[in-house]
Structures are given as structure tokens and as C-alpha cells.
Image (cartoon, rainbow, N blue to C red; front, side):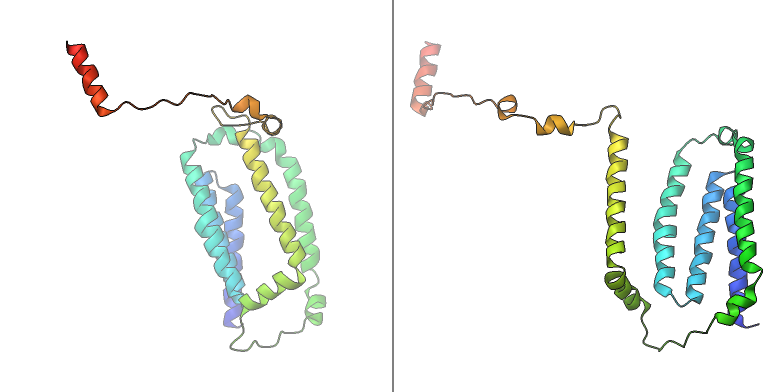
Length: 215
């Protein structure tokens, strides 16, 4: 067995263990930390596939940004763990059925590994100056340009919808009905007041007025 195979099996074992602990840990903070471990081991799998850009993106984006945010939110919230586990046994039968179906599908795939290995042809060695970032960019902005742009629009709509739904009914928010905002008229918002021009008094006139008041 080669060194790469040993590393793959070790990372796979850690990934399976951390994934299992994510859904079984009683403390949400511990579950988030196990999820961080799962992301790091997944990045190791990407490194074995010579996809360094995807590996570092997984670590920087998910571990360095998303999971840090999750941890801050979980630690700031006062989560009642006992109340969260009240409906566990009520949903357990449905979850068990889904888990059994998924295990059956994975078993069907793993029962005949010879058929898949016979059709597999090893990939040619990549040159020393190969850049997977360049190849990924070419695929995203040529063959998959329309799906990539469509996914970005869907994410943008989701962000706007989440903000609108969150801020609409909250107390003390500066919410404005778009229909009322469109139907507004100038006369309802602006009032023009005409005032006569006044000539400012000179300094000598101010002194004379002050003397008269004193007299």
C-alpha cells in the first residue's frame, strides 16, 4: 500500500468519525468544532486530488469565516439543549428510514468495486507548470458561465429575501412600504414657503438703537 493510500484512509476515517460526532454531540459548540475538523479533512482529500485551490478555499471560506461566525453565534445564544432534544424520538423513525435508504445506496455502490475499477483509466501525470486555478477559471467562465451566473443571481435573491423577511416586522425598524413609497406625491412631502427679503441692519444702526434703549 502506497503512502498516498495510507493518508487517504486515515483522512477518511477521521472524516467519518467527525461527521458522526457532528450529529450526535450534545453540545452545539462541540458539534461545530467537529464540523471544522470534517472540513479540514475534506481539504486534505482535495489536496490528494491535486486540487490545491479548492482545498485552500474550503479552509479559508468555511473554516476561517463561516464556522467562526457559527461559533460566535452559538456561544452568544442561550440555547436550551434539553428543549432542543424533546422531539428527538418523535422524528427518529423518519430519520432512521432515511438513514437506511442512504446506507443501502452506498452499499449498492460498494458491492461491485471491480466493475468501476475495470473502467477506470489512470489520469496522466500533470506537468510541473500546471495551474488548477487557471483550469477552474476557464471552466467557470466558458463552459459553465450561464450556470455560474444563474447561481450568483439565486444567491443574491436569497440574500435580499432573507433581509426583507427579517427586517419587515421587527420593532423599531425603518421599514417603508414600497407601494406607499412609489405612490408618494411632491405636494405631500415638500412645502414651498415664500418669504420677503429682509435687509440686514448696519453696525451704526445697531449702536444707535442700543443708545436709545439705554436712554
